[in-house]
Image (cartoon, rainbow, N blue to C red; front, side, top):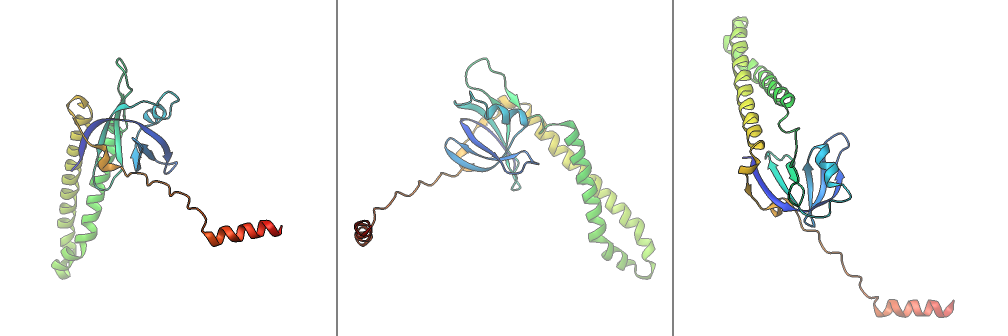
Amino acid sequence: MPKFFNTDCLISGLKPIDFHSDEFSARINGCTVKRLAMSNEIYHHLTGANNTTKSRVWYYDPGFNKALTIAAVQPAGTGHKVLRNRSISSPIKLIARTLLAGLLAWFATWVLMAIPVLSWYGANAQKGVPLLETLSIQIGVAVAVLCFSYLLWVRVKINQLEKWQSGDISLYTQAIPPEPEPTPPTKPTAVREAAREFVE
């Protein structure tokens, strides 16, 4: 189930995971997060020279093991506008993802049901082709409609940031382990070092 929440936090140490994607590793309030997605505008804001204070950040967790996404950022202080992640609610992506979901469902129906349907008709396997075509089209359209409805719901949520509840970002971060303290040399090691210096 997707989650929508906001919190005041400081994001730093942004490093791209892949130069061909919009996912980054980062530090949020001093803790690490391995996958954080955002738009270029938000990335440039967060890496700006003056960004050393906490900002109000709206997070969208799509679930399904996908990256935590920054939906919007509002710089600290009054009067600053909200920087929105336009790529989440892009009409082009909405249509493309809907069509892709429908095509994949149509193709998967053919692959998974071709053998059962055609073998059911036996020697008259050609009569099973219309049934298979009908099933694949119906399932493809149904999946496309469900996908479109879900993406449209997400788009509506993204456009209603004022209704989002505050949340706990620590559920998505990991504390950085402290660096081990240097151990003093043991007595035999210290004696060997002193003897070597004396010989030299």
